[in-house]
Amino acid sequence: MSRVVRVLIVDDSASVRQTLADILGSDPAIEVVGTAADPYVAARRIQHEVPDVITLDVEMPRMDGITFLRKLMAQHPVPVVMCSTLTEEGSATLIEALEAGAVDVILKPRVDTKQFLTESSVRICEAVKAAAHANLSRLPSVRARARTGVHQPPEKLSADVMLPSPVPGRAMARTTETVVCIGASTGGTESLKEVLEALPTDCPGIVIVQHMPEKFTAAFARRLDGLCQVEVKEAEDGDTVLRGRVLIAPGNRHTLLQRSGARYYVSVKDGPLVSRHRPSVDVLFRSAAQYAGANAAGIIMTGMGDDGAHGLLEMRNAGATTVAQDEATSVVFGMPREAIELGAAEKVMSLDRIAAYIVQAGRR
Image 1 (spheres, rainbow, N blue to C red):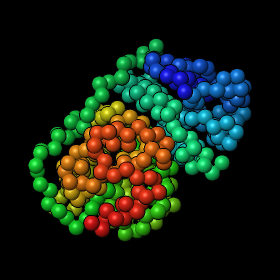
Image 2 (cartoon, helix red, strand yellow; image 1 turned 45 degrees about the vertical axis):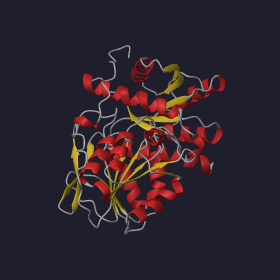
Image 3 (spheres, helix red, strand yellow; image 1 turned 90 degrees about the horizontal axis):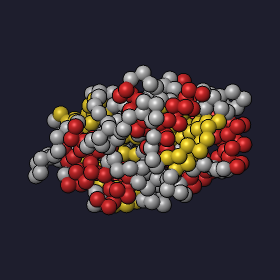
């Protein structure tokens, strides 16, 4: 693949096509090679030039985006980032898109506030660049078969903006319960499904940060709850971390692990982007290092960038056991690689071994 990511934008709205083109074109690592008003136009363009990534609208005339996605993945797999409006109905449809082979989901950009446009621009560009690195053979569906007011990305903030750095040498009293914290991004939705479906009802309590837009995390949690033996729900402020329960950090909110006596619970907070994300894996992992210490286990899975690497190192330094998913089973080996190179991961393991590791961690 070339150094510059070549993108085809498919959306029936001319204004959305223009806004996306402006946002993506403002990133020097991305080139917009064309736009299409519907899948039929897109199919003709692909016959002449195959892009590195396609951004694809869900609701379009003549053929909807999900149908086109399924045809594309069956005939000529290309990394696809689905684009949707922020609605409950849209979030359920986007979960279907992830099952059909989409690499990631993004919200359609709005221009109503400068902050929203700036933050959504960061998310859109990062999602497209991550998709370009995706190993499509690792997607379950495949295995089975700006210049118009776009501002410079904000400073890349660390977890310091949400909670202070851990105090060296602070001892954390051991409890009888282990808390498992997991971070994932691109490719994580289906990978997490594979892990959680294999867990028994008495597995240790789990808190997950999966990079997804708001509302989509609620639909994602409901879908997993219907498939798994464990209880899965979108985290709410004050939720207790319990055996057999999995809490998914809500999109657009940071989720931190807290402790009161022997009880672990989560705090859901607003705040700036951390490591270019909200929720941020680094924020969750740092809170686990501070409030759980050696009572925690940290797992970093498939995804682009370095969110979670420094937090996982803090967990390891605090006595937690730590794992990174291996390259062979990652859709994108970005976040795990960063953690491994930083020395944050005690172990590197394949996706099919992670569920057993979680169960074992709960027996420590």
